[in-house]
Image (cartoon, rainbow, N blue to C red; front, side, top):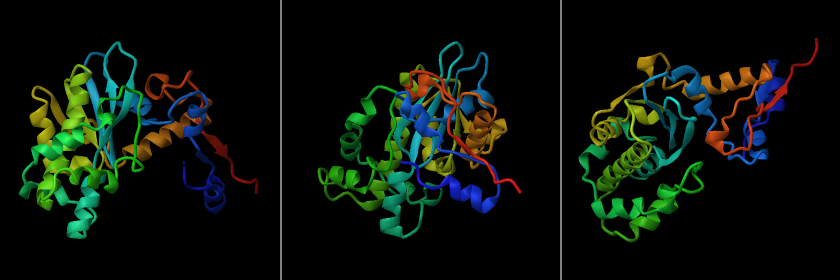
Amino acid sequence: MQIGDNNRVAALTGITTVGDFRRRDMAYGGQGAPLVPAFHLAVLGHPTEKRIVLNIGGIANISLLLPGVAVKGYDTGPGNMLLDSWNWVHNHTAYDDNGQWAATGNVNTQLLQEMLADPYFSRSAPKSTGREYFNTQWLHYHLAKVPNVFPEDVQATLVELTAISIAQQVQLNGGCERLLVCGGGAKNGQIMHRLASLLPGTEVSLTDKYGLSGDDMEALAFAWLAARTMANEPGNLPSVTGASRETILGAIYPTNPR
């Protein structure tokens, strides 16, 4: 479900608006997500280096930019979503700044293994997920199996869940020379430290180092997709979404004549 009304955006701003990107891909059998890997390929692809772009938002997703191989991209599992909601319950702040609270806790191995046993992590791509799956109910279901875990230990374990579920997918795809990270989770020092530890021999760095703001990545990507739509060019990658063909995405909502 895509929220928002493009008609109202066009009417209120007086600016030609492009939106509703996902449903055309879905009409051809795709998942309609993720759409950002096509942009990652265009701006961060390299002819010889094995690169993976990692976006850690509420959900974490990767774009596999491997020379000579069709681009793939999918959601690895929770990014910040569970961390933020658990932190809100116990600290009443929107997020755990730089993972400082998680750093005070210890990973609970039993809880970690319970969560990693979820079938989503072993499912083959293409796949996507969201808050409808990885949410507080999901977390409490697993906590009920491992009672009496200190709140800070739960937070530390959730950091490890995010890092391991990402690292496993990087390794499953043969690893990479550079893991380029963007999204809010890139500001969590605990997650970044664990990724570097779990992926020895891989440079784990911010996309900012390569000229693309990690904070603006999603906005930049959809501006790029809008430009593709306006130019009558396809914007999806069937190897990523599972669609049966490339297609022009979205719809154009022009401004009214003066």
